[in-house]
Length: 268
Ligand SMILES: [Zn+2]
Image (cartoon, rainbow, N blue to C red; front, side, top):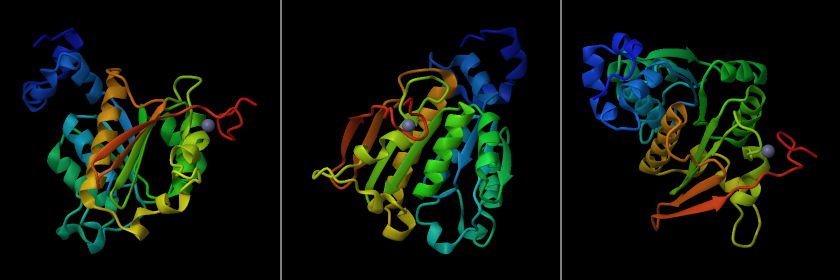
């Protein structure tokens, strides 16, 4: 492997070279990319079915700082899908439970924890402090608030959702101009065959049921998109909504366009 800069040589130690070797072997990443991950900060909103795999894979990938936000405590009914928590952490604040797991997976990673819902102003501030925001929340109100905050902060957002055996993921590049946002596209993107939006069914996975592994699939895609954004590699899901129906294991991609009349990013 190439040690591409002297700074990287000094910063990445032998143990880290070994820990991240399978990533460093990837030509798209190499030592310089790994250093970039170690220097990166990501805001993870929600430590549930999506936030679990998101935070675990970002931690094992060596993202330097994870800011994790969740107001809830671990309950027995969470454990079927929220794999960052364990039977031993039932009753604990989710941020404390997750910090234990994430630091056990990788002590390199600094975990900054907020055990409450952030106000919109705080969300904007927190989004400004990081390189990427990733949304693992389970309700529309939070997703729209996070979209507004990321738009205001100019920080890219990786958004995902799961319900029953279905999932969806997209990326919104608020660090670039002209792309669509969650607010201007959501309704047309999940329209049923009859053209009517299906908002209610996507409202809250905790009320409608969800297969744990499907949350795992979508969360893993979100973590992958975060790493790609941090490294500037590949082609992200910007402008595309990826939809999974795990019953048939069929994937669909919906092209997203911005709505000039969008109340968040609209130009009219
Ligand atoms: Zn918009």
